[in-house]
Length: 410
Length: 146
Image (cartoon, rainbow over all chains, first blue to last red; front, side):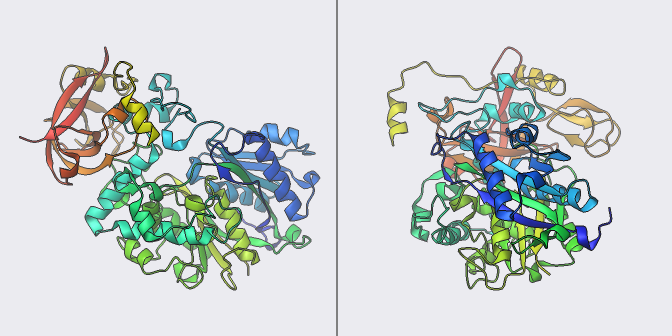
């Protein structure tokens, strides 16, 4: 699809509810929080709900756009999509889909949203079907397998493999074996982004400083992952408003342009904790994002050296290293040394990363909060503002079919 | 740790492993394991091996058939699980989840047994052990090769 300059997509509004540790939000439902975030984002844009004609989200969303559109009183729903890319892989794709709708004229103002209250449904660390436990956790029931994803569980559950840290621990174990990646290098990601969170009043772990000794002293969950290698389990919601450049010029906020986007996966790379175990070394020990990265750079006309700040999906510290490799900030196998060089630290690192604290320290909203932080950086509003930032890479989850964006201003 | 102490006072009967639910692609695989045989799929067109069981060959999309595997392999990667609050696994902590490269090529997820979790290494030679887990399914566990 061609696009005219006037219709090129911009992010013009961001909205967030409060973020809390799982179980911390009980007075509002996950769906109410979704609506709250959408309303906040539209207000931030200086638009009215009467201007909104599209809603977009990504896989595993319980909060259906067709209900939200009605409840929010949209005058006319012209566009409603959910990206197939699984939870963590889809935030950037949802933005890209909204951008495509705007650029083709299918819709004028599309709000991308995610609400995720693990305390109200299940904690991801407990595996599929797990509940926020009052007593001892129970094994999720594969007798209820009804989906292709569930069917995969037959190959994992009998072996006590039903939570993400276990699956990705084996990826990092192999990466350590091949490249000598160390615990301290993974710890650098945890400690650095915790320091960023300390400046962010929204961050769930903002008040909890972490040293490398704290990191190394945290208990092993699934070796090589310790507790502090794993992202938070939280409650909260956020939203982002996408519209055309033409329309953005009439709004109060600095328009943040989508300079490039890409989504997908290499051959054979699938979804689920078992899907990728048979992949060749080169893919198994990657973020699975190399093809996405190549297309992102080609479409944006930019490269790693042009990026001022990055918001990289961080469900596990080690996978951040793999994403940095896939997107070309360092060579294959060099993610660990790159992190250990201090590159990721605000304000002086070569690539300040996760300036909001990320999923490890701000909140786990399936990475849509990373897009929100990217918008803040380009506006100049971050609590860890990279001075004069003009380009921001935002990535979605490593290890699943995924997506990425370059945000910026010209 | 409150969870550890509650585990000690838990006097309920032991809980079995969750059993796999066979589907159209996997039923012969689970049935064979029930009988103590490990199968892999082989492509009738290009001779590539694969697991998990699928309708078609991943390499060429050709038709596939099940063939018996030797049960021997090496550890490709692994993790030592030190936290899992779900029964029965919490009673087995620490336990090892491993990816095993079978001699025939396919990679399989399993548990490593009969082995000190701290002694596991990538590349270790292992061999299959079979366990019946339901009326229609067994599983393959792996132990260090003798």
